Every structure is written in structure tokens, then in C-alpha cells.
Image 1 (tube, rainbow, N blue to C red):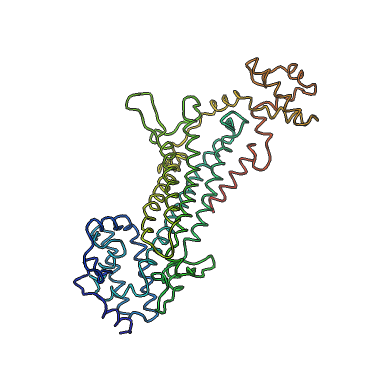
Image 2: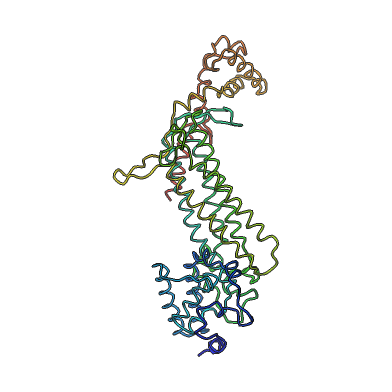
Length: 496
């Protein structure tokens, strides 16, 4: 038996103590923890979702301990066998989570020791719950980020599909919620694709900093055992783009750092802000005053008293849940702001806001991808439902706000008039159109020429909604040709 094994066996509590919290730390204490404090300090009923990460980290740690000669091959095999049984028990629902054992780590360790005896006690050699939990949260969050990346892709695909179907649909573009200029509805949808593409990039960047190994830092100062931390990192896939292991370089920082959780929640908050902006537009567009779109019935609700109502509950709730996620970000920042090095019990409070942020974001992205793009019909292979666009209502709304006024100014500039003079001239034309209760394109040519003699018959092409759209044929513009080019770019990017 290696020296470290003999020491651990000699100092370990008896097997009969393994069902209680006592085996972890309480030999020094003269009285048991009160039931009130147990409930107050326990985290097992929310951190048990880390069990897969905890077992993966423990198996990688055990494999390294065996390779380094710190534990024997028999102990390593016993740990593997015990963890396999625990995995089976948790997956089947047979595992008993115990409040007395405080958290996911002690629950699994206690059960392991029940199953394999002293080998289970040796697993904790060279580590602490401090670096263990930091590793578990990182492993868990890495997997969740991968799922979120897939959901962000699905939402982008849905938005691109809607854009592709509505390139030639004219929507009034707004500034200050006033009609500004006509835009392609497809172009408008692609604006959100850009937002969610940036969210995906941010998540990928956060993932890189999440995927760093704290294990082996022990409580705060490192350990006296000859650990191979880089081996553990490689086993757990905590490597850079070149396949080199990435390990926390300072033990104090490793066990106390929660930047990665804050950074993820910040990225999630910004993503939810984008969802909330889209939600706000869907809510406005769906209202009777606009009537631009319809949302499939399965995403709406009715009223208990007003039978005519169809309420956009999903976008409204997403708008509300954005505040919830942003609140979690503020909570995590506040949690960390006053903590001295190294680990403090405060850090137990990082998990619930982080878990809820992940759950809220995943649920929101999943439902929005379907609400926007529709649901796949297995029989036809086509998406059905989703957003239904009322193109005539959009175009009529665009005609109400003199959306082509800037086009008239541009027309005059091309005739040699300075833009500021053209701007003033068009303002007079708009005033005249308002007086006559008509659109600029409906003013007679003689009236328009009264504002400037160089206005000719071709002005009506510039004043048409379609002409305005086609004229903005620059990179990133709303001309249908540009929108189709952007759709092709996104489709190629998302298919890669």
C-alpha cells in the first residue's frame, strides 16, 4: 500500500459513520449541527443537477491518482465500479439524496464509500470540495453552453426562413416608433439574425474561459501530492483549440473565481434583451392597431372575460423573464463584490441564479425558434405554423407616414441641390401632402414642381415604396437583392 494510502486509512473515520455528515469534517466539533442550520446551509436539492459533472471529475481525478501511484490499481477499479453503480442509481431514480450530507459531492462520496469501502475514502486525496465544485460547475456549464449554441442556431435558422419568404414584403421601418423609411420585412428579420449570431459568438468566447480546470488546487494553496493536473484536463476535454490542456494557474484564484459564471450570465442577459426586443415588436405587430402578423394559436391565450381576445403571452412572458435573467446577473456581481480570497460559503449562492439563467434561456430560445419558424410536420417535411405575415397591412402602414420623403430629398440632391436645402424643400412638400391628406406620390407633378423646377416625371419612381426599397442597393441595405445576398450568407454560415 502506498504511504498516502496507509495515512488515509489510519486517519479515516469508521465505515459506520459513512451515512452521516460527520465523516466529512465534524471530528473537531463538540455538538452536531442543528436541523435549522442543516436546512439553511444545504445545497443538495438544487446542486444535485451537477451529479454527472461530479462523477466525471471524480473519475478523471481517480484515473490520474492511479497513474501517479497515489492510489493503487485495485482502488481505482473499485472507484470506477462504484461510480458506475451510482450513475445507474441516479438515472433510475433509486439514489437517495440526503439532507444530512449537505451537497451533491458528499452524497456521492458517501454512497461510493458504502459501496467500495476504503477506496471511496481515498478518492478525495489531493482535492477539496472547493476545487471540486469549481470544476463541477465549469463542466456542467460547458455542456449547457453547447446546448444553448444549438438553440441559438435553430432560432437563427427560423428567422432566416421567415426572411427568405418575405424579401419583397414592404414593412414601415420606424425610428422613435414613427414611420421612417420602407424596409423589406426580410431585412427586418435579418437584423435579429445578426443579434443572435453575436450572442452565439459571445457564448463561444465564454465557453473558452469556462473550459479551464481548477481541480488540483485543493482548498486554496495546492497540494503536497504529485498530481498531474494537465492529465486530468485532457481527460475532461479541458483543452484549447490545439488540444493542449488548459489549467488554472493560481490555486487561490482557481477555487474562488466565479468570473465565468458572471460572464455567462452577462451574455445570457444580452441574449434575453435581444429576445425581449423581438418580443416587443411581435406584441405591437400582433395588436389590432397594427395587424401586421398573426402568431399561431398554440403560442397565445384567451381572456377569462373577453371572448374576442387573443393574447401574445409567450412574447410577453419572455419580455418579463428578461428582467429575471438580468436580475440574476446583478445578484452574482453583488455576491462576489465583497469576497476576500479564497473560497467563501457565499459562493454556494452562485448556483441557483446560474441554474435558473440557463433554464430560462434554453426554454425561451427553444420556444421562440418554433414560434417564429413553425413546427416541422413529419409527414411533409415542411414547417407549419409560426408567424403569418399580413403583407397588405404592412404596405398600407408604410404609405401613411411619408416614408419616401428621404427619397425625394435624395432625388433633389442628384439634381444638384445641397442636401440641407433638399431637406427643407421636402419638408414643405410633406406639409402640402398633409394638407391634401395624400401621400407624396399622390401629389400632381405640377404641385411637386412648384417646390423645385427640376423635379420631373421620373420622381414618381423614387417616391414609390418599391422604388425606395430597390434604391438602397448597398452592402447591408434593404434592397431585395441585398437581402437575398445576406440570406444566402446566413444560410451558408448556419449550414456549416
